[in-house]
Amino acid sequence: MTVIAIFDIGKTNKKFFLFNEQYEIVLERTQQFAESIDEDGDSCENVKELSEWVRQTLEEVVSMKKFDVKALNYSAYGASFVHIDMNGDLVTPLYNYLKPYPGELKEKFYHTYGSETEISLETASPVLGNLNSGMQLYRLKYARNTLFKRIRYSLHLPQYLSYLATGKAYSDITSIGCHTGLWDFEKKDYHDWVYAEKINEKLAPVFPSTETVELTIHEKIIRSGIGLHDSSAALIPYLASFSEPFVLISTGTWCISLNPFNNEPLTAAELKEDCLCYVAYNGRPVKASRLFAGNEHELQVNILSEHFQVDAHHYKKIVFTAAFIKKNITDSEVAVAGLHASHFSKRNLDDFSSYAEAYHMLLYDIIQQQKFSTALVLGNQKTTPIFVDGGFAKNPVYMNLLAAAFPGMEVFAASVSQASAIGAALAIHPCWNSKPVPEDMIGLKYYSITK
Image 1 (cartoon, rainbow, N blue to C red):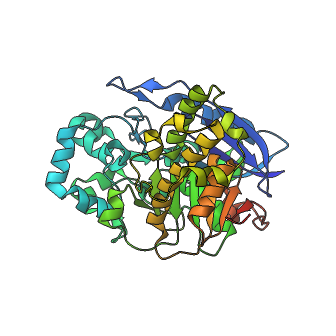
Image 2: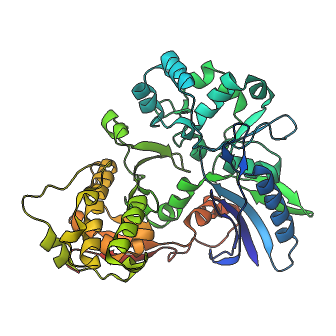
Image 3: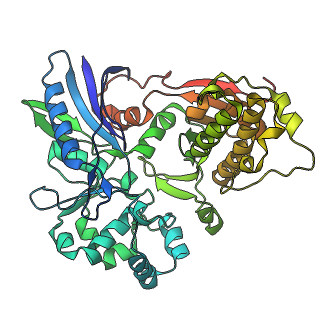
């Protein structure tokens, strides 16, 4: 059976898939590793165990007689560098992007190269400390200079996985171009500060996301991609399936609104509201905004379950009832428009007659924030379809209220299994698959305020 092998590496779950030519999963494995700690005692990825698992899995699967592995690619979380020396050995731990960033270094950087707003607009990257992975290299240069000098290449995690298999070091635009602080979106090149600090000398040559390099395992020639940032990879099934403009709301702990068809430059106002741009696998900019809605939902559902004495998953049984909203919203009430405070936390739970009524109100308040967040990336696309994937796509209360919040737009719950893994496979589709991309890859369910 002709297959492609995909490693899909998340912060918690490390997954491996074999997909056949119809993009059906024919083999799946999941692994977890206990975190390691860095020299400061902060938790970090156990990159040695991860590397060994990747190597062993690949060796084993390629030797299986029932599969003909034609190609290989990788999807992994971003903002994470693996620093290697001339021999390919690790120079440092894989630092956690949530690691606190030294205040004095941050001050030194912006004093030297321009204001936070100026640099953020040029690099389409809000100021996020170590989440701006370029700042990790700046920190190493000034706080760990002996280690910095040993680095031959700093590879983002997806490209390090590719290096493990191929022995060839490359950089990828989906990793470089996602809130790293490295990429100047107007110049389409590294930012001036990268050259001034000679950080560019630590970065491997940029290689196209859609092309492959050759490797040999057990005397078998395989085509390998160089890996993709998982956020970019997850968008690819939609770009492959729909040619007309759309907006995707990818829901989970964060609800991220993605618009690959908004080419308007990032503004200071959008940046202030946590907007950013990143570069898709095809080189096009994608405007994105994010909302901590999944986290808010989890916190408030726990409070509701305790107040109404039901289990924490009771919300999954709730059927959408529009009357609950009409009952609790008065004409004089002004919904909170913004990202930083949920109106629901100010409500008195004793005002609600039931869990279902209170839950509808919680989702209403979340949707007011979601409407604000998604509007940031819409631009002039006032009638474009909205696709929702992830956890909230399965929530009829969320979906019906979202449809009501955007009455002039078609709203769909979308389902695509293992989107980031499939996206990594689709990125190099012509290199391994002679069949056309399946047309039924994404399942859609339509919601409207009248149905």
